[in-house]
Image (tube, rainbow, N blue to C red; front, side, top):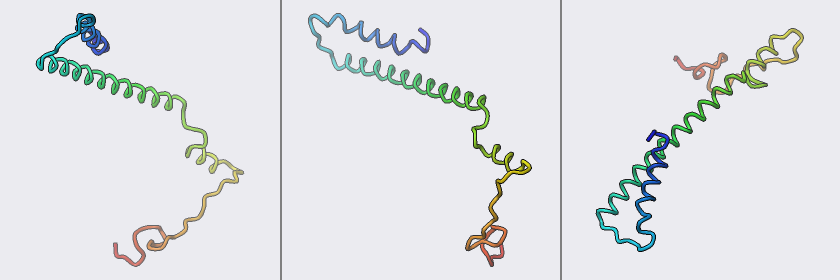
Length: 113
């Protein structure tokens, strides 16, 4: 049983175990209920691990696809290239000092730091 099939094989085993009770019904002891709950917990944990693995692989593939596609149109790289192009009408805005900063945009005006 491979890691991928542990969940489906485990669920099939639980299903087979209950097939005998299909016609005549069953009484399950406390010990039997405990064993069933433990089996279902194990299957739940295995299913959760597989879900995380699928999500991780999907994120990885999405990142790879984005990296192969190159920078997005309108990205900072495109903007910088346009600013540097001769004859471009793109201009940088002047730095506007904010209250509480000096002219260079550092620290608080009048502070010694």
